[in-house]
Length: 417
Image (cartoon, rainbow, N blue to C red; front, side, top):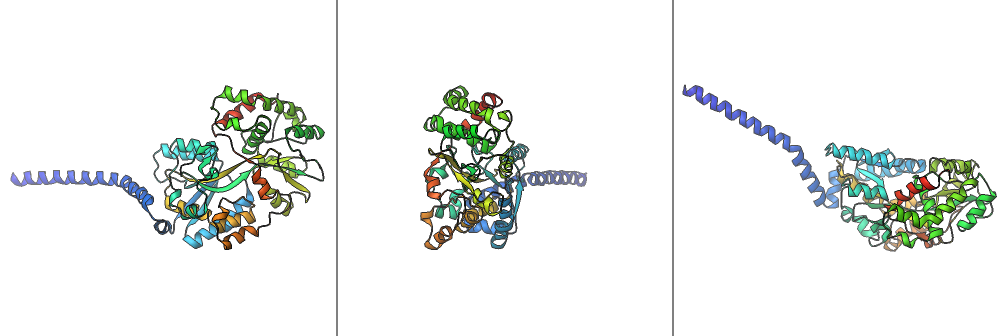
């Protein structure tokens, strides 16, 4: 009887022991993830590099620029592999799709998500940050941010007037410019009044991408700035009626523009890529882009004619910085931080400036004399605006929350009117 009782108690103890082990196993992944995140936050940069060796970093972002895609695949990725033994996996995807995928993974409780780095800015960053979809703050842990970035500049502290607070690192600068072929249209409009006359002179040969395309959206905001000024919008309440009243003179201007536009303003090109192709093919005589120096690249590759010229309005054009962020549930935060740090290195920024003609994010005054040479020797090429002149007419972006309101109003008040 005692033997049977002992055997029963022993069996019961084993069951309890196995149950306890099972509970520990179920808790282990969460504990490992907590340790992993804590370790990344507490790591030195050298420890990050060591932890990231042999890993893969996914980089999600817009894939519509083939020259940029080629540079990322043929220049940046090989350097990351050679220098850090990190494999870069570029995933071309529109930002709304990226954030939808990220949101779904986070809601599903995936702690080792498929997204590491994200190319992001504007209202998309604000939405992602406010919904706890991004990891951070992290930039203070990156040596190149500390050494070469002007951390006090509003180009780095604010994204569409929204505080960044260390949740994204600068990738490149953008500024809206207009483009025309001076052999076809010798006059280059310097303001919205001259633009109206230009459009009337070349009916059906001018348009802009349908909002919310980012290039079409910045064109409309620049028209608003030229007609209504920009200061009132920098701290404007995100209220539709308030915004609508403020931009009404610009809305009326855009409505008056419509009959002279391509397809009489009844429809608009579906993207900046479509618009660019229409301009390159001669279907349009005016183009608009956020990529201030793309004209030089396109002239060099033969897409644009030698007489193509970039220009601005006299009152200026809107500029911003685009950024890199890290997904909150990234499974390789250390690798993402190493990659982001490398993207901000003077060597990489100089190469992007030279090959892609992207405005650099490093502070020139923080560079060594040798590093400055790499930037000084860059030939911006034909058809471009000198950098000092371009930046002297750089206007701030509106607060991110105003942008979708303006896009909605444009759809209601301008399209087909």
